[in-house]
Image 1 (cartoon, rainbow, N blue to C red):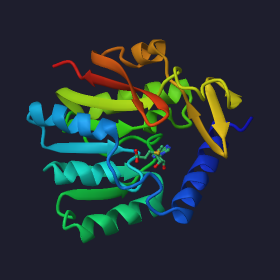
Image 2 (image 1 turned 180 degrees about the horizontal axis):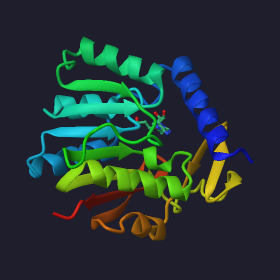
Image 3 (image 1 turned 135 degrees about the horizontal axis):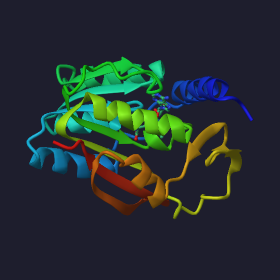
Image 4 (image 1 turned 90 degrees about the vertical axis):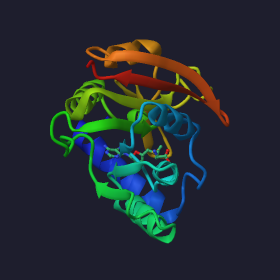
Length: 218
Ligand SMILES: C[S@@+](CC[C@H](N)C(=O)[O-])C[C@H]1O[C@@H](n2cnc3c(N)ncnc32)[C@H](O)[C@@H]1O
């Protein structure tokens, strides 16, 4: 098995290659999680969002079209280039920024300055459980008290769960992409020191997913 650093580098290369070879890899329609999250954030009076693992920005562009300012990050420059071009084409570049960032590194914002963080499938990527704990701690650091974090992940209810090559520590791989399926125990673990608003199962195409909403205590 690759060490954490080797796996991380291999994943960055794999995603870069995937986005270079397949423009608009995830399609142009927003994810179900983005539609749901826009309603939640809108009702909470939030107008700016930090999106982690935004890819080529199908959700960032959707959120911007709904009136949010979106600061989108990913560790694939190729994906972010696509996002920048599409934002420019659609006249949304005043509401969308796209910045290269590996979420294993500290998040750029200062403590308590972010209203809302959104991540569709980022948390299901190739992170050890320790890295996931550090990431949610870092997200809690940058959120203001009462700030919201919504993430969606592959669920252990998914038909693919248990059918991929096992990498250990709950990670598995297919076609060179490594990832993790979440159960409720992991959701609860990552919600320590948060207010857990909900962990809702839903389906998107053939995938079974979990959408988690948690708030930094006020
Ligand atoms: C399954 S894709 C989802 C993309 C986007 N959220 C969407 O739904 O269209 C996962 C994304 O996470 C990014 N990613 C994986 N590991 C990352 C890391 N350590 N730091 C930043 N981005 C990462 C990948 O480049 C990829 O764009």
